[in-house]
Image (cartoon, rainbow over all chains, first blue to last red; front, side, top):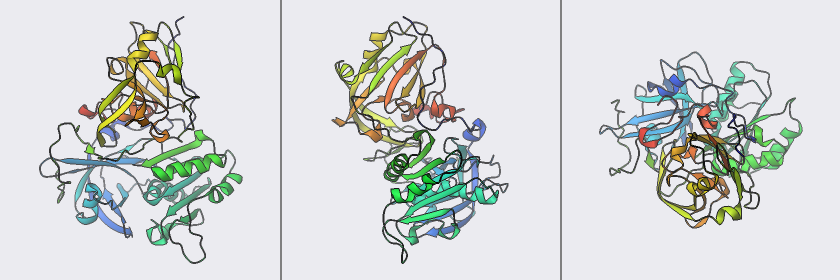
Length: 254
Length: 201
């Protein structure tokens, strides 16, 4: 028997794609970006503000591709999440960890100065984007908080009243990126050392379960971002606490 | 060329096996999947090929392992710009499955889909002729869940998002249907040597 080749729709168990279209032109075009400011966040992370005159705009959670070119033509390119909220400034911000031996992050942390130019293309991928339309439960660790912070900033800048909560894990208060910016929406979790009176330990069911016990009407869209180890751990906490698998989006930093 | 002031890159020797825009990840094997890693045992795993074929069918774990084994030794390339050299996967060539179901002469493309619902589209020519595998071993050990175990598709000559983890089946078509990342702006084919990263490249 021959089966017909109708449009095939598999039984998708994770977040449905295609909610957010990505502009083909924006995704294809390399643009020159100029560093206009550098702000230290932690001993190992700094935020680089870039002027991108033809930036088409982005949604919180999207990333871009960044390219550095050496004098001999050697090119290094990496994906980075966008930290800033969408706005009309034609500027975007990236927050980069100084990775040991990292040739791109190393350049940013030891060479880059305002006035230097790099190339970017984007924004890319609508999958991890959050347009601010549904309640968002955000779980991040280390620099994995970067795309989530774009969401928090967007939520504030637009004065959205859709529920939003952030659980952010860091090794210590000194390593917590954007520490000064968090408000009542955020619960920090410290894995190595914590302020007086705060428990030290890994993100756990005790952090996640209360948020799922009191979820908003329609439930949460969950966004998880961090190292693969964190992403595996956090996504399993969410599933164990009852979050549907098809409403968990994961961005893993390889 | 838009030279970046003060950027030299890490010390390197010219490597002709490295596609443009890629770097050698060395011993690292980054994990990049947008979904929760499923708890999928070999007993629950199955692989189906249907659509424009003479005899659609499914294989259980044991049935798939009864097919002639095949090994891929070579390189893999991820669109996020890392490449990994000299990897060794064990499994079965897709040709072994397709020779059983016999695609129609009108068949041109496949959609590969996973047990989680992930999809990716491929020209039939990219998964035949000894260019694609169902792989369940990596470096002599069972493939780990986060890398797609118990079994994944392996199409090493294309960017690795085409190598669907937790592979559940192929639907054979006479036209192209964009898969998950392709609907999210990624290139329809994904040839690393042509730098086909995003739609429009």
